[in-house]
Amino acid sequence: MLEDIERVLISQYQIMGRIKEMADQITRDYVSYNELTIVPILTGGMIFCADLIRQLPMKMKIGLMTVSSYPGASLRTQGSQIIGQQLGDIHGRHILLVDDILDSGSTVKLVVPALQQLGAASVKVCMLLRKDRPAARETQCDYMGFEIPDEFIVGYGLDYNNYYRNLPDVVTLTKKAIEKMR
Ligand code: IMP
Ligand code: MG
Image (cartoon, rainbow, N blue to C red; front, side, top):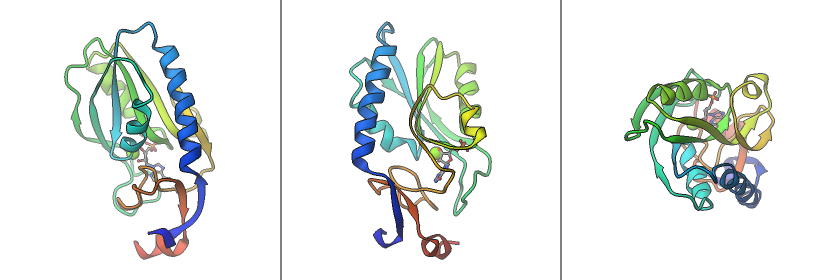
């Protein structure tokens, strides 16, 4: 595991600090709402979501949505697909979508309309990371933690072939690590 890391892009300490700032902003923005529903996009969004919501003091429910976009050993999105959901009744509810990274935008463009279709009163998007590419910048993103270069990264929820999600920092992988999984 650790020998596969090329370099640390964002440390767990930077992430913690930034999450506190994002949570303060979200708390201010939602002050006039009674409550909200947080929807992490699984699997990658669950680590960020777990850290974020513990900094949010308001009344909330959690709904789950599983989206697949980088199946197996892919380094580019293969198009997003909703492969499971456990949302409960979200009719009339304010939704905050939480995910690890905004890349091509296909996940957001798939999930936001799906939630609106189910009658959500509002849908906002909260991403820890956004890749520096036009497609990402043109996609709805109401809260963003860090803008990063357009590179393949893992850790803090992000995976390669479903591995490395448990690394505490956001890192790049060595070429050797990428090759051995192909
Ligand atoms: P999008 O739908 O192209 O915006 O991509 C969003 C999803 O692709 C994220 O939720 C991640 O699961 C995955 N993804 C995008 N970039 C990376 C990466 O660099 N490493 C690992 N997963 C990524
Ligand atoms: Mg994901």
